[in-house]
Image (cartoon, rainbow, N blue to C red; front, side, top):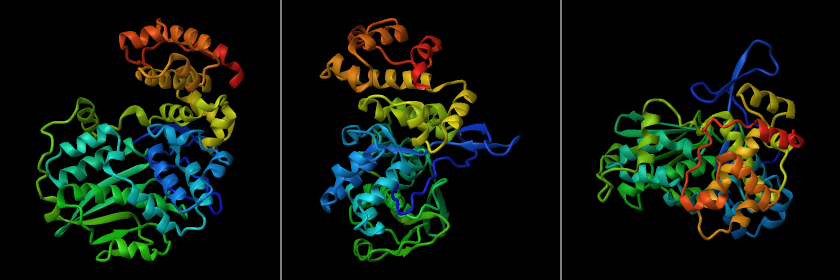
Length: 393
């Protein structure tokens, strides 16, 4: 996650080479750019919300006035727009220094906040170095714009963490703190809870608060650096992680395998990212293409062109987002089908049942009873759904 506001900085799309979809440039005919929405898991935003409540900020009032999804604290595993979250955090926490706000949120975070597959893969590694390499390989499970790598430097290892496309944001330090503290937590999992880095480097030029020096009295804290980084002693990373699992889950192994081969999971393709971006808003009722374009920081026309370029449309990703979210909730036996329908943004239980049957061939209750799995790549045509949803265009 990252932070804040001041002058509203609008940076969602950026150039990035090995990943993401390629689109015709909207301004320069005949050129192409790589674009990707910047998303992070909502659980990281919730760390800030907790800090803001602690310092007495008007969290509920500001949430009601914001572009953030409703009930965001209840959906920690959904994804939110990083720029939208940055704007909100800066405005709501304006009485606190950015560096201190970031530190406080980072201190509330823990490894248990990570995606279960990522956490499993990290804890399955047997040394500190291997755990850091696993974090670097899988970091985009947490944040679609995060790029990490581990570099050897004499007796130390420097972990470099870049939030691609957001480097010039004036409050990037709040995001940098969460990333750096994640690395610290991983190292402490083998080196002990009192371990401290010898150096913390920030791209941000914000002055470190006194609380930073109090938390890391033996570390050099550098700002205005070319990249976000943290320095760890090789000896600390060579320690064995006793009690680590002998193997990881199939999902963890699959993610690690994809990353090792230089392939990011297709969850970070443009269409999938757009689907993830609108999912948290489904519970709040209607979301149309204009709202989605605003969240993505592009014009309505540009969003429609990019989706068309990917062989999709807003109607299609809206239906897929609802279906995906509904399938997730149907896996919760304590949640009534009618509540699943409302949470996923369907107009009525009848509408939900009809749409679900069209998509899968079974009713929601049958799906739940047989424990079926969602397969949004089944190849089923979405043309009939686009006719129903034409009003959202």
